[in-house]
Image 1 (tube, rainbow, N blue to C red):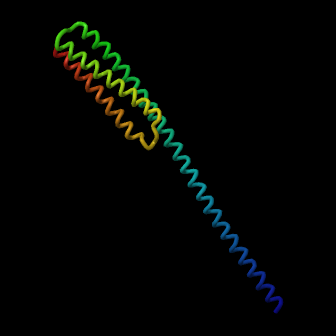
Image 2 (image 1 turned 135 degrees about the vertical axis):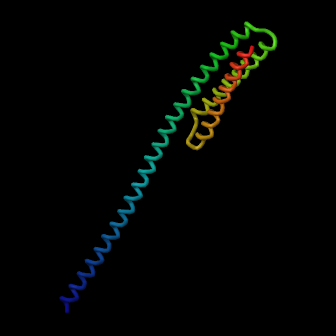
Image 3 (image 1 turned 45 degrees about the vertical axis):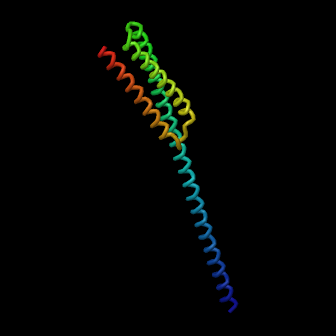
Length: 149
């Protein structure tokens, strides 16, 4: 009977030890899974940050290019204004002021661009694209008006 009791005790101890190992193994699996999720989140955050940086750089180049175009258009209009008089000259001067205002607005947006975050990026990008579109409309209008005169 002592032998039977000893075998039963050892068996019970072995089962308890085995169960403990399985539980520890499950805890390790959960811990590993949590760590993997954390690493995945970190990688996704890095990818988002990298994408945002590239988008901001591209937008900054586009703004700089458009500001150069505005400055060239203003210089061209100023030369043209010297050659005209009356209503045409007034209209050209109005368009120059409008372009200067648009260039100032683009400069302000470029400053905001430097501080853009992933939370406000889409709204800022839309505002900048709208501003670039407005500038192009003004330039197209100017060119059309000058062709007529």
